[in-house]
Length: 100
Length: 168
Image 1: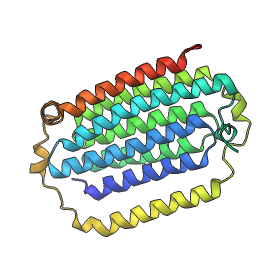
Image 2: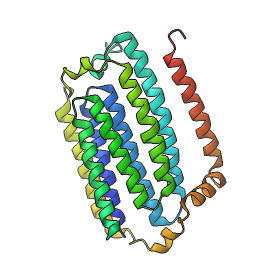
Image 3: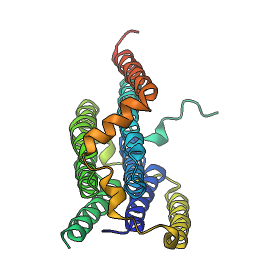
């Protein structure tokens, strides 16, 4: 059996790469994709601990996170399309209508 | 032995795909590598004997959310953004902070991992017919959050339709 800490390190690696994607890239679609990466990292963490504890609650929480990620991706992409229709730009730096 | 080979294969695939997601210039390439990363995560779930989550991950994430991303990629014009600089102005500071976060969490896991019990196969056997056990817990204890999740998905659907309309 693989020690649980190996799963935790994998989850940590994916999460950090997702964070790097969010804070470094300009393209908003890429930012949304990095958010999906982070959510998946958390899912791996939950399922590893669930297997350790022998209780299915980690699995259930992971299912809720997946449903939530689907809803969030749908709404986020809808907002992105609406914004793109008006401003023709996909780069986060150029979405500065609220700046002073 | 097969356990370890499977884990290291899927873990390497997931991490390499994740790195490629955040570094590609072409957004469509990033989307394809994200699909690979999601399928590798599904492989990790299968290796953890979480069969229900494995199939939900493949169907929902790789087959639903990523198709949504690719449709949006087709609708917006990505060519214009491909020739501009890809990383924002504060990329150095952001990278530093993300690595600091990663280092902090690595230290936390490394310090605490001797406290994690080794995990006996008996507790893992309690999750064995994965779908049945998950179904029992989901529709037993967590039926109220389940209904709220369905309301959340309904609201998200309505929101997405409203966003996509030309005239609200």
